[in-house]
Length: 186
Image (cartoon, rainbow, N blue to C red):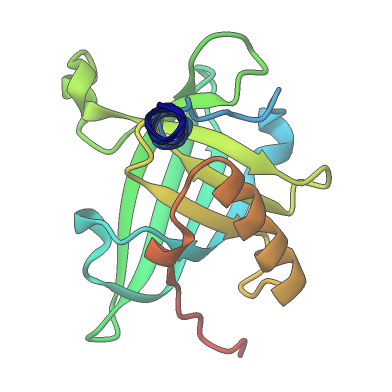
């Protein structure tokens, strides 16, 4: 009887461990507590990303430039170098969701006349940001997208490794990250 109880107890612990692990991976994505949009404006270089369909043509020098618009939204200008050496650009609009210091934004690259359609807006959540606003990580609530961004084209290895540890603590799979090629400064 003790052997059966022991096996049942061990099995229960094993099942509990697996269910706890499953629940941990389903934990909500956490944003930073607050975002000062004025400090966030400017140029951000992509250091790494989860591969996605809309950046397939980009081979290097991927960056985003954020600037304020009079209506309170942000202009987003994304650019990258393609395999044929051309520069590809996409202009979009970002808006904060919620409070004026919310780290949850939405971004749209569709034409303005489609802005009323909810599905043209994508989640842009700032989930990690250093106090000096030099390194940021952006994702979405489903962990489908992930970008590591820096104010400079290269990132210190230790800073990158520390960032990866924080991402893993939020159940992001760092093995899916693809490093972005950056051209040497001219």
